[in-house]
Image (cartoon, rainbow, N blue to C red; front, top):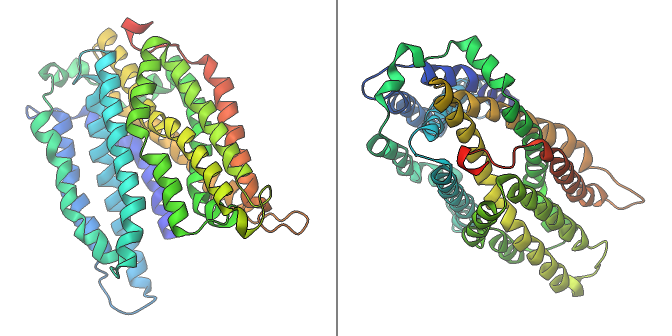
Length: 388
């Protein structure tokens, strides 16, 4: 419960922290400075999470201390991220470069997920504890200092007239028509995506009755093609439009969900048909890999381009606020999806079929993607001025 409460606070605190980095003035660079300010407590809190202050089990003191440390970690991590995302509006020259930046970010996000899914079970099977693994990964946090050496900020953003007061920043963000029209399909997309991620292991092991290595093969089919799929997605985006490419990703993910449903024991029962279920699951995973890269890239690209357009037209920079509001929307979608709908649906039993609830999950995800597709027609075809 305390972990959930800390996550809720993490979602709500995005907005004031975005204002901090948007309004900061420093010759060193406001984004780089706010990233640096967030980095130190983030590392300290991460280390403290795995070193409880008291050794006894079921300690109320440790629970409260962990809750406080979680808030510090989530807050400082959020400050680092919204500061970094705030750079997207002005560190590249045009929409095409911004799309490339979002693509690279999506590529490394995919690598992170792939490594976590592949290496974490392997290390655990080798006898390593979770604590040993996470502490061993701590040096990777140093990579968050890379922007300190690469990001070159425009000194004009330190001008008083470039700053936006807190309430005005919120009003401008929520009043932006293009941004509002983007948040609605994003909410539905994230609702479905988080529900699938919450239930994917249960779907594979329960509804599809696959074992460990078979699930690993299916996950590999989902993540390994992502770099190539990102190239294909970007090509579609250049040839057609951002909206068209995003809609294609939504429909592809909906189709992938239907493949996972067909691959269940409801359609192919029995131990002797595991290969059929696996092959159908691999096909669905490969189709879904097109969507995974797109879903990682589009939120960075669209929000940063909207902020860049406003900065170009008004000279006012509050780009981190767009990412903060976007983050709040996705946190709410995740909470509703995994904390309410998924928890109630997965336990549904129909006609003695205990797996019925899990088999329904991909259908709900597919429906959310289709609804997102329909509502995405209110989005702009392209967000960069040169692409309209």
